Image (cartoon, rainbow, N blue to C red; front, side):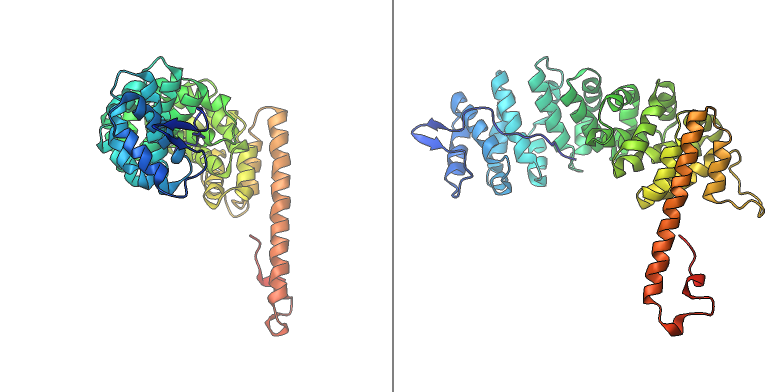
Length: 387
């Protein structure tokens, strides 16, 4: 996941330097690129600042310019070390655009020594600079090569601090950067040591459940609850499980997959400990919906979790087949409160109706391809089991 920001410059749409005018239209020749490289290598602070702004503009949407301007990485990183907040932000935004969708530039930026100043900017009282630094780490952390290096620079505890105290945009970028970093095996334990779950839950409560932010929050939670400390932290946090359940009900398909995965991991780790806390948050309607409308992984996980949430996790006798309907009816009978029970029963009825409609469509499609010689005495449909 890379930074989703729109990075168009806020400065004038064109400006002149040494008699050369830069237009806002995408250059059809390398002239603007050559000019930007000349300025960034001039060593003159005001010309370097102009060049950084121009590089930011040229690389906003052009992959070709990102390649052509890769030579600017070194001078831009040098600008991060001068004592000028204006230079810091302009250089950061230029580097950020250079790194978007360009693996080589991502790696080159880190190799050029950008991480030390960028990580230090996470502690800045300048909100814009902190946001730019967080967005930069989000983009750079999309590279698998950079993930362990970013962690080794001490970025993870500072990203968690941004997640706790930063602006709304910085918090969203911080959780996405942490999610990127968590996919490297050695980074997950480092993230867990910072106790990030209370701040992840706080962000998850306030963000739109269908947003990319919610998806990354749930992805991170799903990874962290693999550890006992993560599971304990989530259940200890007021509204922690409920926030995950809400994403399971209202999130994107990918978010819901992460949410049900997190709850399933918890229940599988210690059913006796986590079954009741999960049931109390009204998870059944969302699980029922996932069994017919989720991704294949979500459907499988939802069915498995429903089995674990029943009174007995073991299969019933042949007299009471272990069907999804029986599993859910068993759970519903144990739910306190008419509202939750009624909602679950309604969802179950809708689920059965959807299942019947899907089976009917399948039968109709099957009948269309059957020839008279294919049909048994009782008709083609007798050979087809419902799905």
